[in-house]
Image (cartoon, rainbow, N blue to C red; front, side):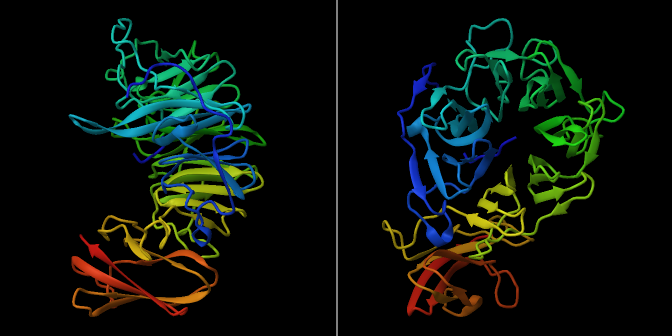
Length: 487
């Protein structure tokens, strides 16, 4: 299941103009080389390593074919749906992208699908179709007539069709991308409120079989949905850990194909959250990484499995012993991902890892030894922006940027030449509360951030209120800003 930040449109195809994507060189949105035209969201929801690497964020789709040296950016102006990218899939040169937004309703704010787009020429042109809905007059089954809570969480492309897992819209397929039909895995008439197996979150094609994850287990077909086998926590001696299946993928091993699934507890109290995997097409399952709600998986040809969850990035060579990566920092700048909530992961040959979080993108060219962290932010001192600012602001140490039991606020600033940096925090009466940074060396011009954990110099949480911070640069410049702390 993809995580994303968060209308009915006339049904039909729309063609984007040729060459409409924005192209820029150098870093994507690396702190040391920020570009104003860069990505505008730090929520990295989906990653696809195919025909280069495609990155889906809370506001756009990005594509690189040279390991990140240059990127192209796609939005609704280029033919994508409006809002966040919720899913990406590709096969044989065709890439499909789903989008969604948060929608205000009389009952509150709910996610809503804004359609699907596909390209067959690497993004030069896009075709778009609205999120599939049913005719209100449909009588063969319980129709889904709205895009509210009907958004595409996953996409799969087989030999004959494109398949989407759309939660309230169920499992649907299309042979041409224009006409969609609802498919059920149990032979029952579609009713998203009546059958857990009709509430679908994941779909995956392994080259031979289509796998579908629902709130009622894992389902497999080898004949484009004519017949199905279902694997649940209750119907096998060696079952999956739980019936709520939010992600499926496969790993090529020397001994054959291994199917992986993120299997989470649904309604049975005996179910648990874990990763489940099968080496015999689902006839039996092994359970590992117990206790983790895994959002996504990726694999390296050398045999390493990567899994991401709300607790970070995990890796395993044998599917039994798992290593959790420490907090990710940019090897050059020290910029960190101040979160453990990882949404997506992808592996590109040769061995480049792309890691998506709710606090930016991290890329490693060497299997996780070194990292480059990319984050989106407003450039200090440009376009009317102040020379320094704090974010989030107001700042809650109990809610924001939580890592290792602490929350963090960033102080963004920019230098024009190499400098040492010190940051001091003062309360409203201008008494020194904390020396957050002392004589940190910044060796290149660019935009940077320093962090504060909301504690004083003896390690105690500060009281609610307004605090001032001073950034002193050895280049002879002093910057002042303020932040409100609210717990």
